[in-house]
Image (cartoon, rainbow over all chains, first blue to last red; front, side):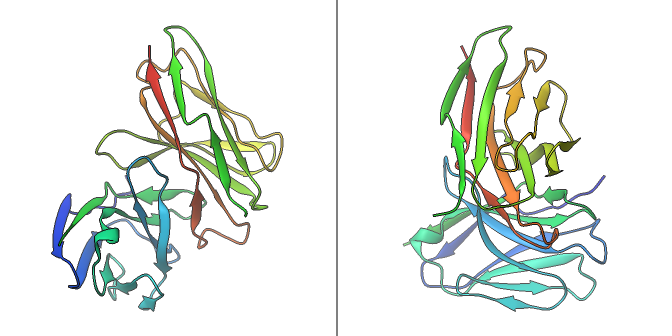
Amino acid sequence: DAKTTQPNSMESNEEEPVHLPCNHSTISGTDYIHWYRQLPSQGPEYVIHGLTSNVNNRMASLAIAEDRKSSTLILHRATLRDAAVYYCTHSSGTYKYIFGTGTRLKVLA
Amino acid sequence: DGGITQSPKYLFRKEGQNVTLSCEQNLNHDAMYWYRQDPGQGLRLIYYSQIVNDFQKGDIAEGYSVSREKKESFPLTVTSAQKNPTAFYLCASTAPTGFYQPQHFGDGTRLSIL
């Protein structure tokens, strides 16, 4: 079965960088990696995506391992507003996406 | 503004009753999805549709049904055969140019048993 695994929770101090890991054990060569974040009682919000090389946008950076079996979402300076559940996912060869169980990020003031 | 609208926000189901959750998008997206989310769990795929009048089962389709008669609409019916329907249901869509595109999500419908 296709599988994506993430740690259940992580903590960070405000203004410090955060590295959120994800393992994509069943990813194939053409599957894109996406990250989303979700606040309570809301739908997930897109954060970033990539295929092979590292990606940056205004929200975060995405580092993808050379074998693509793992990725890391990097928040350069965590704020209290970044507290959320972060999900990694990859497409499964078609329009089907495989979501991890999510990492709950707690940001300490 | 373009987006996905799910309604109602909260829904209650009686035993033996079918209920329908609405999902409408004005993003001109071809692909649409339904996910189920249980407390502390990730998203599990119920059904998805790549194009009008076509849809495929996801990982947990039993007890659910969908239709895709219009591009903008992808309603989900939770039937009485779904014995544990209490969950948060999320609808999503993707642009037509391929599965590298990110998904856009609605704000969900929370379904509970009366």
